[in-house]
Length: 463
Image 1 (cartoon, helix red, strand yellow):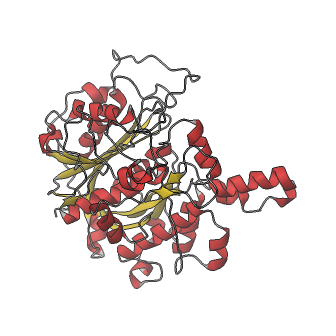
Image 2: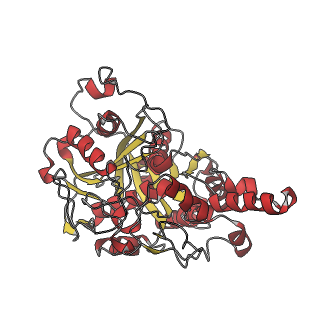
Image 3: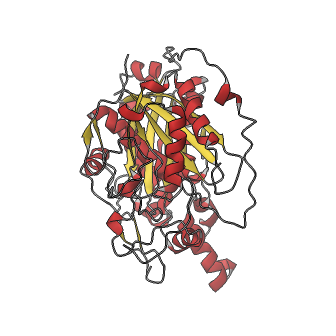
């Protein structure tokens, strides 16, 4: 038992802050997507509109290699430990899923590497590694054959270059405006990771960032797929990046009363669906996918890893941090994603949950899932965050990679720290030990501040 009292939490990062006005839920006005009678689901068959995954890249607390990352997830390792990047001794939370020993050697030149915010460094490295895994690394013959005008980059961030921003403010206060770096604005804004990656690899197609808090990565996947389906691009690097484990980032979430304070046992602090959970654990990193039209991938004989079937995004339109009490936003987002994917609910047998280890949020997500999936007995549901913490805008990117690896390996990673499970969670949460599981269709959920909901659907590739 721990002496500290659990703080109130809500869905994902959403924690109830009483000073914010909240709208009353109006269940009588349900969106058409939630009530419209739908035709039998039909998956896309047009190879110009089918979207496949041909590459993956990441920066994580478990290193920069995708296979190593997933092996350590399967082993049930925790990447959470004491913060040593700065003196956190005065904070009520003193641990995180902090990346240590990060190296961008071979991917970013030394001069730029010293200037860049970690948020951008993680983006550039993971993007270039993803392109390498897709067989189109910068400088390769295959890369030279791409129509760069139809190749884009959509890597978002929830908070952008927070270290650069914090340092700039500190210089302004202590030394005056003349000591603000000329890189302060460019490296702080959220779009610069996508922009600098494009400059390095020469992609001139759609390029921007999306910032929807912890739903960011899934929003980017959804937008990238739609660019491809509309014929605006052949290939897009998409995902999320985040580096907020600095004093102002930690202090901000402490002020929200969102974080676990299990300082005496940080490895077990992130415990989704456990009765004794007391808040989420901060993480960081980047996760990106190379998304490509099937036609384009087949023409260049690309390595097809999995298929993106569809997705959806929506908003609770209810409260800044608190979810709708009726769960309508999340459940309707899942329903819309399945419709977009051409998938019936009974086809889904794996869910990578948002599951952040917050008191109300974990159960709110489960209740929404139950509104869509009436028979949970065949569904495996797990939480990557139990091992790497909550990587905020990068969470969906890293979790998409974990989801796709579950498809390709036939193994789903455990949700660790399951000691005293909530009885309401009657799914198989893959508690503490990995399980062999042939994934038919998988969904990956991400939700964030502002009521942003996002769901993406993946499946094994079948020609």
